[in-house]
Image 1 (cartoon, rainbow, N blue to C red):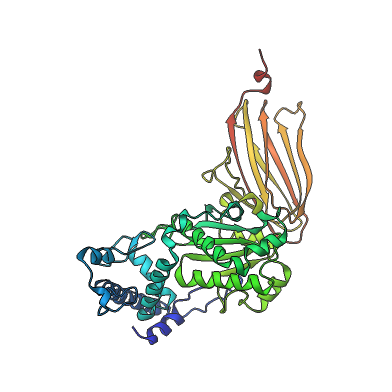
Image 2: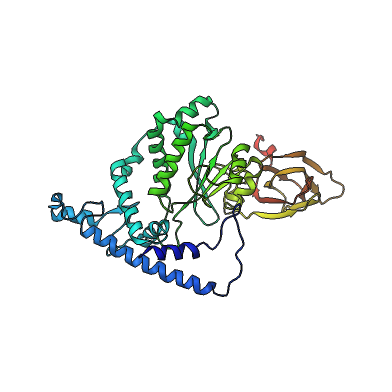
Amino acid sequence: MGKNRGKILDQNMELHIREGNEKEHEENYEEPLLVHEDEKLIKRALIDFKFKVEDAMHGNYLFGIPDTHPCHNQTTTEIEQLNEIKLWGVSLMPSKPHEGTDTLLLKFLKSKNYVVHEALEKLRKTLAWRKEFKADEILEENFGPEFQKVAYLNTVDKEGRPVFYHVYGDLKDKPMQYLKKMISEENSDKFLRWRVQQMEKCIKELNFEPGGADSLIQVIDWKDFQGPHTKEPRSVYRKCWTLLEEHYPGIIHQYIIVNVPLRYYVSQSFSSRLITHKPSNKIIFARPGKVTETLLRFISPENLLIEYGGLKRINDSEFSSEHKVFELNLKAHASTHIEIRAPEVGVTIVWDVTVVGWNVTYKEEFIPEDEGSYQVLLQDKEKKGGERQCVRNSYYINEGGMISIFIHNHSNKCKKVFYRYKTKPTDPTYLLYKT
């Protein structure tokens, strides 16, 4: 497969670019034909690539050693072991395929614009690097509690991809010099090994079989962290990003960097080369005021953590992602009411509400059906812009009525409101103390 094929695919494969770099494509009556041609080229490239990978395995040069080398006087057992080479638990031998073999090989092909010999070279380098770096053993290494605070895997995006968080602000109890030391040149090897360990942990959550989630979303939070603003941390970051691009092709579907300081955001407005050496639509930057809005493009509210404006709480005993979430559009300078009617007496209603960007008047009341009963004010406050925490409250229903939630939008922009609720049987409090 030659370079012309790579050029054709490079021109035709990009069907859309994510928001921030989005451009609408003009309608073209030849588009279906182009897509069809792309599919045929990809299929041919994959067949060619699989043939070359298997040939490299049988010839014992997948690691770059020619089969005429003296060290190739190997036993049958050693040759069989070479034929069983796996990457991330997926067999690379096309004649003895795993259900995810094609998916994995396509990641290397796509990273090289479907130029087969370049994809093969990239695969060979990755396997050699993993052997030298001892990547298959890295999950057993312990980098200390300070590193464990920074990264965690939580929830999935709208397409079922795992969402992996790097939250440097979780080290805010440490002095800034500690953060600088953590990503300094002297600790760069440790930092890179830790970063690779995190990638290997995430890959354990992926499914390379057809239809499975074979990539992840990476959220990097720069809150209380100034980012790679000096030469030394910037150098370590570039090493890290280069390593991931070279040896983990197609594993990270999208980088979302949130709470970005103003100077970096301004820089990004003019150039997307802040961290990588070439523009990348895989990287999205979000200022503090746009964090929730940006993340909700990829993650549904029930799966977005409350600290980012979503509804998800760690170890939540009340709600799960299975509970239905309702959505409202609140126009500028307008109001809305949410009514949650009590199905019966003797239950507790629990509810979550979040407004993207807040800057609203927020009021909760219980309104009884009996006109002779009193309304109960549960909450009445001004929620400032920039707040992200969702509101959770509950109320025991001892008479017929409903929960009424009033929200007034003070801003000149439309806002989204997300809420959910449930009822649960509850014994009145006085029964708990009855002897």
